[in-house]
Image 1 (cartoon, rainbow, N blue to C red):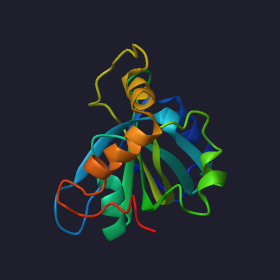
Image 2: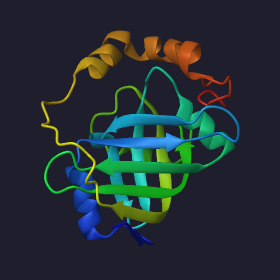
Image 3: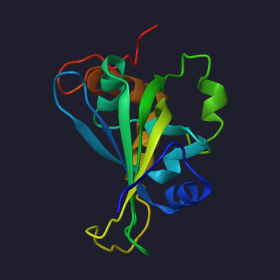
Length: 181
């Protein structure tokens, strides 16, 4: 059933790009494991072993905190329509912030970037597919506008305050690096 690959091939990339949602998982050396759903519009496959994810402002900033301590990350994609399939990308990742040299070049891969908090660049060392027979079928109803509207309403200064209040440390009190120089 499950198959392992050393890189993302064209068929796997097409599968990733067809999905509407993916899940990101990270864990610090001690503390809570984080698993979050994300919109695939925020993800780009940049090569056979490289993906880039635009991490927008949210209620927490667990991924960034975890990557400072342990750079392992897993992304999971599930077919909720069509033939069953699960695809996981395993690898090591790093956060790139607006203050970093690579920010502008990498951000250019995305059109809508309001509320961009970090870019997460992942070096993929294993692609694993499995059957997905147990994944239920769902119909896609549409995108949500709430995050974009919330970001626009807060404005740049309001987002910066929010980062100070809610995104500077993880649930376990670990620093996220959002304001490091």
